[in-house]
Image (cartoon, rainbow, N blue to C red; front, side, top):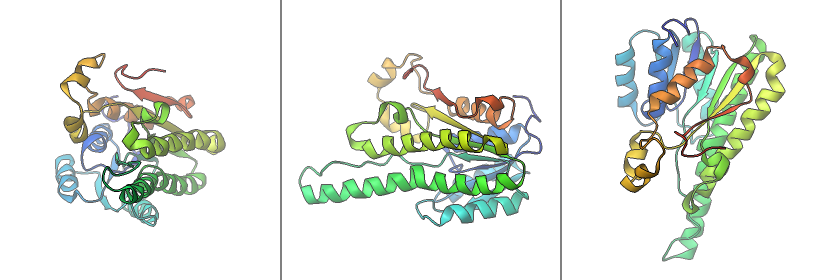
Length: 255
């Protein structure tokens, strides 16, 4: 993408204080977009990012574990930018949902239920609620784009401790396809991106040397690779990719 390719675009990026979200905010801002940087607990990271980028950046706070937050986040971002053209649902968390605790089956049952509730809310329901706000808004303003961050786990499932995470991401993948099919005639395009291991704080603690040696490129994906794809999709230069899922795994997982 070239500088200025997103000039005039107004983009809301959730979970943008660090990691993939921060890389997305930097990239779309570089290309000329106005960006609403959503954050929850990492105010320092979001503030530092806003200071780094300078103009055309707005900070939006909201806790997406709260079912009411999506409406408030959308309203705040839309007010700050005078509207939203593109929603990037990046916020999420890899939350365990253990079948049972080793020393207490009852406690394990509670952890199972809590894990499912948290995964569904953060990785699916909050994104669905933001998609709803986007669709209501886009229908009145000639369309827009929705880019949902899913995971390779949406295709292959996740490990035994994270069954709920994989199921939630699969739900988000299906939601994206349904939006593309149901709202394309209103000018709405919807895309899903399914990364594997990405070079963020989470990967640094979870990718062992053995795992790294087994990756085809012998490296985890740089977050900038995901960000460049988001910028391209947000540009409107490939509208007929709507409904597609694009895997960004360095060939670690292929379909």
